[in-house]
Image (cartoon, rainbow over all chains, first blue to last red; front, side):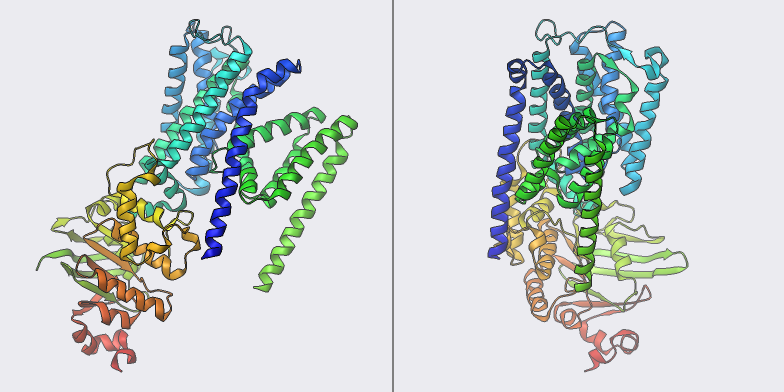
Length: 377
Length: 250
């Protein structure tokens, strides 16, 4: 018993660690506009605006995927719905943010309600496939909307108008708006998952049949969470469209939904700051690797496999378990990749092959250890 | 005496197999009514229909005088039917107290409350703690369910069922997989709550059944072949042939 309580005490200590690291990361994100000025690097602000917006989407996905156990493979659809609402309204001359933004969030919620109503009738792999199929429907809707540019997309000529309160053309202002929305989303999710509603949601993740027998109409709660997540993600879509002044079906392509899942899993499902860790790591790696080569996924893929093999629970999980080695290895790999690129501009194939080989070796080692352990039992 | 539960001519078929065959059963207020029968007699199928997970093909179920045959699972729970699961099915990553608090919450109005922290809610935590005390698990309240022993899981199951303040408690093999010590403790605990709640007990452990039950129903091939006091069942020739065998004859 004492060992169990020790274990839980040390777990509490290390979840305090992730809390501190998470807050520090958010604080760092708040300094980006300043750093961008200090280093005279406007691209830094562009990159991190994207990161902060995607982090909002990832935080919303984490609510249903991490806490609710609902693997929605169509979450990017709401980025599209939010973005298109703003884009289409702007196209028709409606620029008032007070109309655009709430409407975008509400429509995202309605779309989430429809998708949720249909998909929550299923479970497991069927749920994944149905959310994918329905979000692809939304994607093709955007593709076929020829009045709004079809698959070429549509430029937004004028950014949302906050009536002099906020100037969204000012990049630091826009960045801070995104940052505040990210903080608000995280706080909202934090309150929600620890509320009575959140208890039901988490209970349903581990055992929804059991939840029904103790008296919860589980579906209603899951659907509500699904809608809330869709609405927050719709807001991320609004920000995406406003940021790039452009909408296209590509924002809601299924691969974008896949990216969002990867961000959440990489950072740690069902942890408060996990999605932020994941988004920062994902998009920074994408940035570094894609500057080597357009085949950057050859390198990125094996890295994900390594994370799944050795860091269950993602970055957050590694911190909670105090896997200092794993975390150091991750940081080392990060700087190594950056360094290799700086030294050997074009020879990306060599480190890529090394990584693939390392991954294969690690997989084999893990499999072999497991096999011996099983035989031992 | 008032009938808490009345099952009349219940039938459930799975393809060619009749798992529940014209089953009738009644439970009186405050009794422990044991249902015994060999493996495959249809005990779990019966529970499934009582709880509402399975829809019977024919027959009716009345609970406190009300027809609940078509009532969905969560409403039956709200009406006062609680169940413990045969296979452990608690929420592993929650603490023991969290688990029971969730059961309390299920019967404390809707849960569309998004802001206040549920783990600091006294109206959930205090009744939950009481239920843990009832089953003798209060000292383990803050341990994660996954770290509890098998016997403790079973106790936790029953605490969760009790926390909903049920009128009827369905216990599906609460002693399954328990050592003799844990079994004895469970019998002791069930004796303690006897009378405060009507219990339908499904159990293979005959010592426990005869120690606890006020009445016993014997199920064979989905049909109740006998119902009566423990002594009557022990003496019943048909029951001995079908099921009890030498064990009860000793």
